[in-house]
Image 1 (spheres, one colour):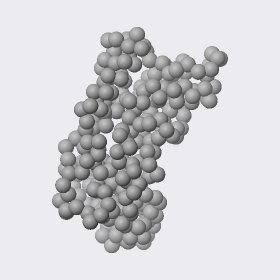
Image 2 (cartoon, helix red, strand yellow):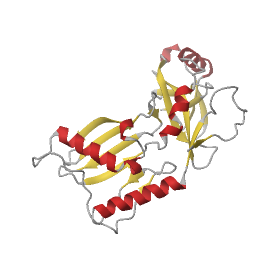
Image 3 (spheres, rainbow, N blue to C red):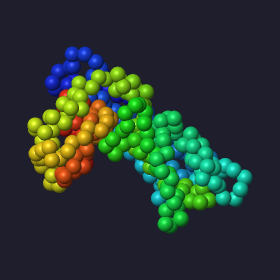
Image 4 (cartoon, rainbow, N blue to C red):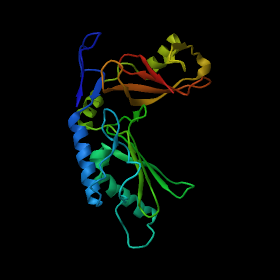
Length: 261
């Protein structure tokens, strides 16, 4: 679930606690392991018990490197080779079956692309969008790798579970820093970032950098203050030209620079 530890700057005068935290949950991890073992047994492989989970979210990081028995996507259609439409329906059914390990309600997932790899394998990439704001910061991604005969090669999810606990709070959170103020703050103060050695730096910005505050997003990153937790921030995603990075994320509540990429 999402909790908020005491804020060093004191509580906000109104609105929900901020930032939001997604904490590690032993129950969520146990449920993922039970689900995987049940699915493995359905594949007639009771010994297939090893699984790699993501930290904090307890979503699946990867399949075992040497599974005892192959796992297959659900069969759909009557022909020997599934059509693209049938592949997508098979994937939809697979996601429903593996929902606990994926960590997202299937209704939150959108297929971004379906790629045929040079080695003959196939990739399906999904993005999770549990609220009106897209997720950023290497979270909210699902990738399914499989063969033309439906055999599952790998599965990886960085989706955020328990979305109902925080999406309504974030949706109700008013943006206290509008896009013009976010851009002005960057021009006045520069963009904070860390160099390859991890040292904090300030990158000065000018009108020549052409800042464009595109949209509000939910930026997620491992917390540096709360152990085994992720922080969720409402932020402006700002495009920047003629700089060593392409995007700056500015907190829409307190105006701080969260990250650059």
